[in-house]
Image (cartoon, rainbow, N blue to C red; front, side):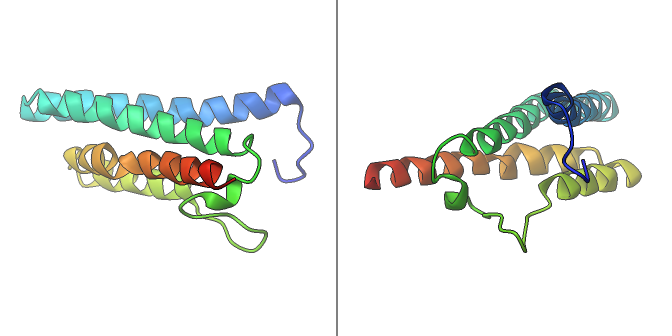
Length: 130
């Protein structure tokens, strides 16, 4: 990763492994939150959180393929700045796990995760202006 000397298969695998880690972590947290509380709402929140995380990753990857869409995101990356989304996601998951409040990451990702809607809207508005 550091030298950016990777094969296309390695690049694909790196992205997939990152998504799979988030998927199975949220799946396990939603099941455990359901087992702790007995509320089926935890399973629904976990499903929505998994969808949001997966779909926002898809949108992020798709923006790289749309000409001019990369700088129309909510938090555009430049050479000097970037938004550490994965780091924040993992920090929220760890916080919920360490405090044994598994509902917290599920609630956060099932609501805040809908930012992908705003990203699609920004790109759509940009495409209409062209």
